[in-house]
Image (cartoon, rainbow, N blue to C red; front, side, top):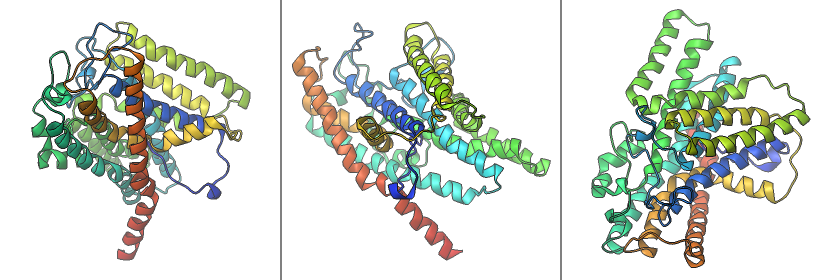
Amino acid sequence: MFGAHLIVSIPKDSIRQASEGSIHLDALRGAAALIVFANHTRALYFSSLLKPAQPAHALAVQRPSTQQSIVPEGFGEIKFASEAVVIFFVLSGYLVGGSVIRSLRTARWSWRVYLTKRITRLWIVLIPAILIGVTLDYVGIHISGPGSVYTQPAGMELGVAFKLFERFHPTVLIGNALFLEGILVPFPGTNASIWSLVNEFWYYLAFPLAALALATKRHWLLRLTWGIGACAILIFVGWPIAILFPIWVFGALASVLPRKLSLKQAKGLSWISGALLLVGMFGVRLLPVRAVQAEYIVGLLTSLLLWCVVQQTSPAKEGLYKTVAGFFSRISYTLYLFHLPMAVFLCGLLNSPWHGWAYTPKNVAMYLASDTVIVILVYGLWRLFESNTDLIRAKVFERERRMS
């Protein structure tokens, strides 16, 4: 999560050899990022293979700032990208929520340390993503010509392009940097993916408050204050964000459940739970299930998979699987926040005036080449920003130490 995509860069010689479970978590995180990425970029050019009668649309994000797909009225429609974001939420709850619970249990909890880690982690990628994204949008609008993806052409469900210039306003950019997208401001430019990062930030605040209220033995008045604070946050962010908070909590609970499986049992149940997750992800798209119900199903199945996978404690084998899983896991957060404006920009160059592409070898090759270019650029941005997270965080803590 991104956000849900928490990767900590630690020198390999300072930690023990990675377990099979940790590599599988990397693979799950990387796969979720690629699902979101491929779903969005595919929708810029091609119609869905599962529903070919529907027109392709530029941004396959069904939550433009109000996150309409989770409103309980009606059934809605869940996309693979939405399901992948649910996986990110569970992973984030497992990593961040689990660390909160362990800190409280060992009496090492510190709001200062916790918030410093979370804010530095988020801003190091978010702020550049906002600025670079709107710059690409602004340039793309002026060079792509009439009828491009930016103009919401006929036949395209492009809700995010409406009044695009209003999404460049400084108040919109600042509001997104302060995690207020969908609450007080729209998303910046075409970067609708930022919506889930807003969820993450407010969950980061609500969960420790709820945990302090429920899991500590402090004075009842103090616990009541913490509980009111958690409720106030969920009320402030609104129903569309608050309703997904329990899914994030599923991951936190999975991190502290007893681990009593043998290695053989863990491997077997991991295969079973992984298959159930795949069946669930397809099933919720084919059955008349409301979007919010589908997200809860995917969240529960992901939590079950996590609980099984992390009990595979045998050392991981070196090889292509470990290398690829580690690579896409490391860049997942950067890929998530940067890919959409990049993809729209390239679409404006390659497909202008916009029209839906047929699934021909030439078109598919051009699409795959475009996605490859984005991944390469994202890797460069990862090296520039996210890979320096630990260094910047250490400098922040050092400065705080000197000032105290």
